[in-house]
Amino acid sequence: SQQGEEDPQALSIQEGENATMNCSYKTSINNLQWYRQNSGRGLVHLILIRSNEREKHSGRLRVTLDTSKKSSSLLITASRAADTASYFCATDPDSNYQLIWGAGTKLIIKP
Amino acid sequence: EPEVTQTPSHQVTQMGQEVILRCVPISNHLYFYWYRQILGQKVEFLVSFYNNEISEKSEIFDDQFSVERPDGSNFTLKIRSTKLEDSAMYFCASRESSGGRGFFGPGTRLTVL
Image (cartoon, rainbow over all chains, first blue to last red; front, side):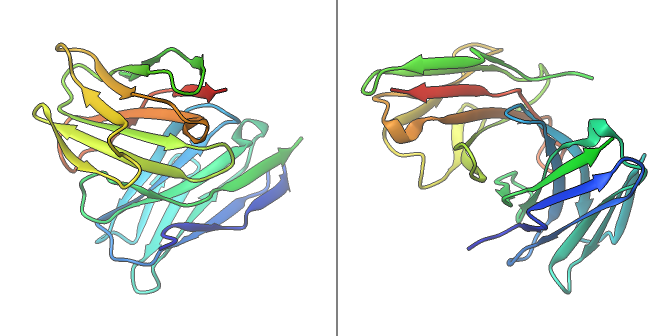
């Protein structure tokens, strides 16, 4: 199954604007995580939201989770050029870290 | 912040050769994982390891793959006879406890010629 599908596939915005990325998944989850990956580099953990949580904040990041719709969104406020990267959601169905990843959203912040 | 390290950062090998990818997890972590990402594709789970044995493995993790924790610090992924389709970025991850947050290494880019 195609667990963890992000949309849009690509997003290009001006610096200072907010960026919103969405993730949908198919099966039940214990938690959902968002990661950032700069081109060809490692995976940086951004935020984890558990299935009993609806919203979480970390700095300029805001994540929501709607388990009834099996969807999550990542909002980056006041974007900066350094936010240019690919963003992935990953679901953890059983909290055993067998993460199921989406294809990612490529975010470009134009100066 | 503590970090997971991986060596080498880039490995080039000929088809059919054996490769060993090395990872040093965070020192007090007990759970270890390998993932891979073929260029332009999704990250995929390969294997999880706890208490010196494999906990779970995916369909990708066939008999050509093996993992080992040879000493108290390293965690290795061996591919016995590499194929062209093994070319990918391989990520190691570790976490302190089940349910805890995981930490990923920077990855090893494996190129099979």
